[in-house]
Image 1: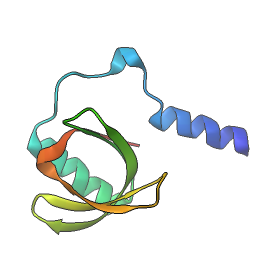
Image 2: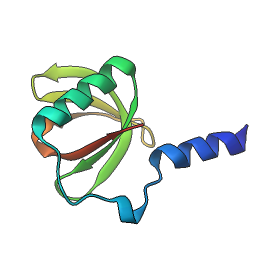
Image 3: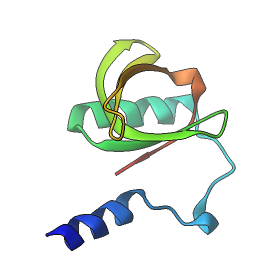
Length: 91
């Protein structure tokens, strides 16, 4: 059981350096992926404009361009702004 969970985690969230994108996504694409993640409770990998990244779940829509985000490693809930997101990937 432990090995299968480890493989699933690495399959979903471990990224290959060759596959990293230097191009950001359009706001409409980011917004639709955030709405999909909210509806399906999917895990997301968020990459911000400053180069940092986080893994977690979208738990609530606060306003038009803001969402509540719960991180997996810190168990924190924070508000993310659509304008600060560089790229989003769904698990």
